[in-house]
Amino acid sequence: MVEPKKPEKADMNKNAKAAPAAEPEAAAKPTSSKAAKPQMTEAKSKKYDERAARTSSIIRLAGKDISGTLELERALMNIKGVGFSMAQALVYSVDKNLKIPPTTKLEDLNEDQMSKLEAIIKEPNKFGIPTYLLNRRRDRETGIDMHVVGNDLVFATRQDITKDIALRTIRGYRHQYNQKVRGQHTRSTGRTGATVGVSKKSNKPATSAKKK
Image (cartoon, rainbow, N blue to C red):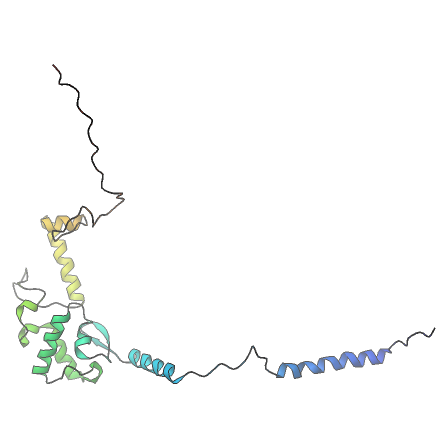
């Protein structure tokens, strides 16, 4: 029986050297799992552009950072102390005194117009705003009708509460104990602490005969 011929050492070395040569070719071909990502659609790119425009135009007004892309009325409502009715009255006053239409965006105003707008916000009663829209009428210390916004409103409210607590008024007493101040019911809502529920009185048993 003829024995199979064993491969020589030189042939084994050739095969070992030839095998790694095929690896770079396989690595060069992109696999299906690493396919190129699809490009961004026009709708998505438009949304990203609009979002970038909103964040880029930030304007400081009455101590508040407001987006410059908002119209005047909507921008004023972002200020603490200016609600819907007050914003409408301010827009009407700005249109009448500064000749700025209500549809104007905040970023379209120049520095002079911004300073005049801030003056109207801080002292609206001097520009034809009715007194009943002001949030601080007949001030305790000065007795003047004024409108407070922003951090000044927070500070003034905190000072009023502190003064009520010091004077021991009913409002101050209820503020001190975290109770409702404006006459609301407190049996079912506004509870603080570990409250379980309403405890009902149990029916008393029938009393025995009267003692002689």
